[in-house]
Image (tube, rainbow, N blue to C red; front, side, top):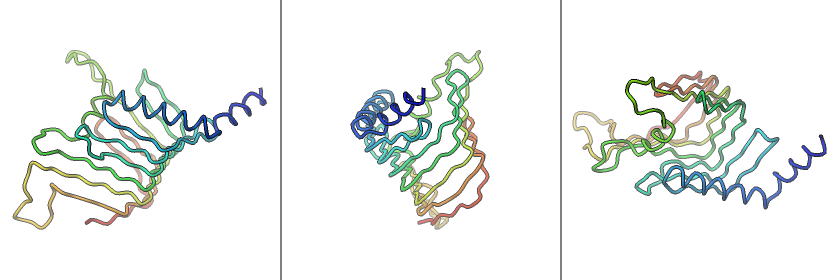
Length: 196
């Protein structure tokens, strides 16, 4: 038994297998999401921890929507039927999250992701099935978050432009992170950022 586990671990840690795995994940996600996805490398550590390097996802207009130099997750539970994803740890490093509305669009560039994960019944008589994402710990290192709306002009009654916001150098340590439907809850032990 230990020999088999050891052999599997060595196989998953080999460069050819991890290169193959990153290509398979990239192809699968690109096809599922209907947009360009690129993963530079995949590293599987101890079967339940994965590190994705240079993860890039475009929005459906071909612009960068998500980029992470390194995304590390320590998996705990995934239940597709109950729509629960539980992680022990999620680490995001050197990333950019660019959400907003393109000129002429009425929905955010991220809506296709929400629609993909929603995937529930469209029957209004049936209850909505909601995804829950939980992580015991989240680490943010040198992240950036931008929100834009290309449909609206800069407000002339204030200096702050809520149609073009950008926060950089986001660093933080977060615990008890919950994302349930459109609600977010977390405990910030440390969180700082610089607004443009």
